[in-house]
Amino acid sequence: MESIIIDMDEVMADTMRGMINWYRENGYDGAIDFGKMPGGSWIKGFPEQHQAMVRSHIFDPGFFRNLPVMKDCAEVIEQLNKKYRVFIVSAAMEFPHSLKDKLDWLNEHFTFLTWQQFVFCGSKSIVQGDHMIDDLVRNFTGFKGKPYLFSGPHNSEISGYDRLNSWKEVAAVFL
Amino acid sequence: MESIIIDMDEVMADTMRGMINWYRENGYDGAIDFGKMPGGSWIKGFPEQHQAMVRSHIFDPGFFRNLPVMKDCAEVIEQLNKKYRVFIVSAAMEFPHSLKDKLDWLNEHFTFLTWQQFVFCGSKSIVQGDHMIDDLVRNFTGFKGKPYLFSGPHNSEISGYDRLNSWKEVAAVFL
Image 1: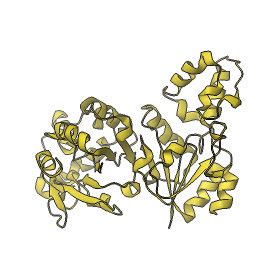
Image 2 (image 1 turned 180 degrees about the vertical axis):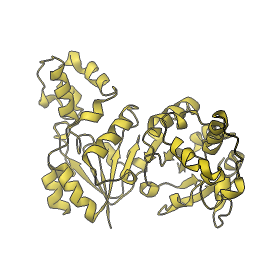
Image 3 (image 1 turned 60 degrees about the vertical axis):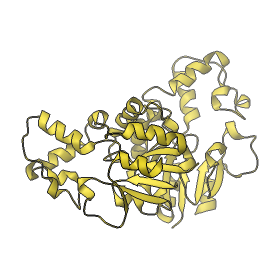
């Protein structure tokens, strides 16, 4: 059975949308400029005077606990889980409070997965498998399997990778 | 630069000793029988009527935060870290509260390591590198590098692996 390594933020979890929701709920009405995200991080799309605050909120307990699940993601991973060895690999170690939040989030929304399938790391260079779905090309460095770039506004200008634009497309490729 | 994958519990952290300390501090004076540990877990060395309680304490917040560091471990890993790509890989995912505790423990005792070098997983089958030091042979399954069994009372009857009996021996082999 082949393995698929799946990233969390911006692939399974709509981290950017979670941040925009938090920003609005806290009374900020600054325009989000998606055109400023390519080649960097979605943080660049927030008004400059709020970027440090947004970056800091990523470190707060609870931020990763309440993120929206990407459309069709749970349904497609449930099917993938029957045909592949699925591993969820998140570079979470930079955010100490995210570890428990991410585990609880996975256990809530992906009840068909088990803790044996979860990996929280710093660098993904240590992880090997047959396929990797990720939104950051730096995570493909040293990976010997096949990489797939999951599209988001922050990586729209990158070329040279097979792209997956939605979970419907993931299903079309792998199922 | 070759990589070394190092396990935490019973290799870097004296988890068994931490549990015995807790057991004594909580007023229990049952004999610990090291002869009952081989072929299983060190939990088997505790009096039978206390094994469920001991097992349950592993899941408590704080248990992994205060474990003793194995003798010479920090000094040797500091040296290894100059010659190898060192990764600390712990099958921590079974114990949700251990994640933050383990990260804080690493940051306290191994200040020369960075979060990029830490991996918390369920199954180690996804991890690859040149060398792996672990006390549980099941973690060597599928590993394509060279395995080294770090000795403890629970694995004393296992043969067929190169053994490391102390951190002094780790230094002798790798430095």
